[in-house]
Amino acid sequence: FDTAEHLRAWLDSDEHAAWLERAEPHVIGPMHTSFVTGLETWFTLPGQRATAPPPYKMALLTWITIFPLITAIVAATGSLLEELPLAVRLGITTALAVPLMTWVVMPRVTRLLRGWLYPEHRPHTPT
Image (cartoon, rainbow, N blue to C red; front, top):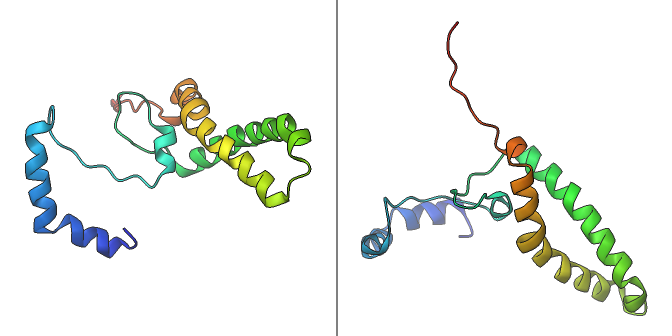
């Protein structure tokens, strides 16, 4: 949706309610809705709902992983692509980096750093 208002209008619409009603028989367990902007899916652990860690952690981890990945791609393809225009080189680099980040790097890094991204919230017990 291009605006929050358009999203809200859809969510409150009769058509949306009708689609949810049609989907209900095909769902195992209770239906739930989550809203993600895109990057949150990089930080979703297998078998869990898409819950985003704090934005500063997502930004830091994205930079920490994408910088060496792009550096490696540029180092590996540099001599092959050096004659191409900059925009084409960047297009090829990002065409390699985005799928690698989405399906290879971030799933592994998210699992590896899940304790930092999603610290367990222990209930406070008075002493």
